[in-house]
Image 1 (cartoon, helix red, strand yellow):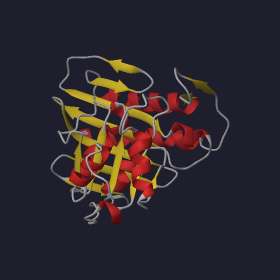
Image 2: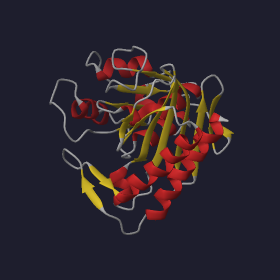
Image 3: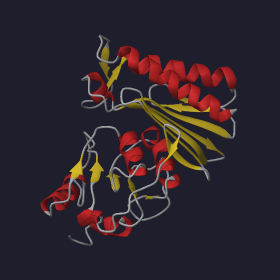
Length: 259
């Protein structure tokens, strides 16, 4: 039942994304640089939350635009109504709806729907991950130099040692292909599907990664923070890989190893 509601909710959000895509809509800017929110974000969020609350009115909800709807439930829904808003606002089809579901602090299900690409990803703890109902698994590259990676850059961050630009420069100067798609949820799903071998980012929010990190784990990959500790979506750093290149990537990100 709860899986059905999760899929209904992510598909409802996707319908709103499609309804506005390449059309006219209002855009406002949240705090910070290049941090837009569109009419479509609000419409998708409302459609998602309505479905959840109609079926599970007592559940905790954390959503990017609304914030927290706090209850004492053991279940928490973590929602990004449109991940890749700048892509969406510019008619770039790499954008999606992402919903993760926690039970007692553990992520148990996740769904990511990129309707313009016609890709629906789903993962359940202990049951694997799928793309459009077909099982997916991570790739098998065993060295970073042979890998295809993806990352994202925060618009505001401290220029700290081994920061986003420094890590990016180290990799590309050695010829490692590193892409930037503009949607962390899709980045993670594409690692899960074996399209990328690794994804790293220095500053994410819980709704960016809640569903996607479970997708990678259930597809056979590994996800940690930059210290190699078990990943939590409530801290900013993430490294998600096929598992084979994970330790090498940790060394590179932390400045302990060159290529």
